[in-house]
Image 1 (cartoon, rainbow, N blue to C red):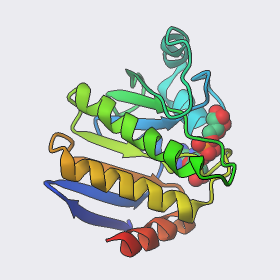
Image 2 (cartoon, helix red, strand yellow; image 1 turned 45 degrees about the vertical axis):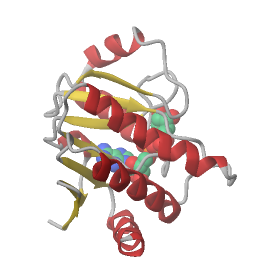
Image 3 (tube, rainbow, N blue to C red; image 1 turned 180 degrees about the vertical axis):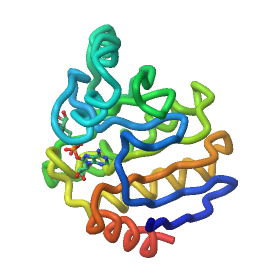
Image 4 (cartoon, helix red, strand yellow; image 1 turned 120 degrees about the horizontal axis):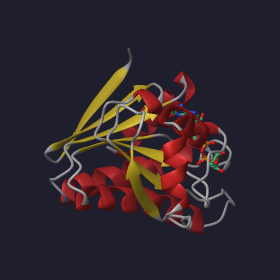
Length: 178
Ligand code: AR6
């Protein structure tokens, strides 16, 4: 299996090719829609693997705005928790990287608040929401590395990339910014 590990502060940042629903980190992040409903892509896969109780809990949360993060139990997933965040729909404007960075930051802050020490992210916004993966990768990695250097509580952040192409884009972005 292809895997890259980068040391950020006292924590590890990993890039892997894989399926977010199979990750054994304490939390996994969902690329959610504003309703926190089952949808396509990551959200569809997470709801399918976690089971119908997830949607029951999500309904009580009253949705989420762009960049906001909310937490539920993991139900049928190996992960104990799911952090749901809504990435921005790509508009090719200066607000895109700001909103995307906040999605990662708010997810990490929520993990810290809950005492979670390992988190897997998918590549937020780069599927249905249309964010070019090379640009999104830079924002994602910069934001996470910056957070890990300032906060010691999260020991592992794993980017679970769904294709070799996405893995290569994140690898190139990591080399560029470090
Ligand atoms: N594991 C890891 N990555 C995956 C998986 C998986 N099981 N499935 C897809 N990806 P997307 P977005 C990759 O569309 O762009 C949904 O319909 C995928 O190839 O899931 O933030 C929601 O309901 C892509 O690289 O998220 C929202 O409405 C990346 O994950 C909307 O899409 C993100 O793709 C969110 O769009």
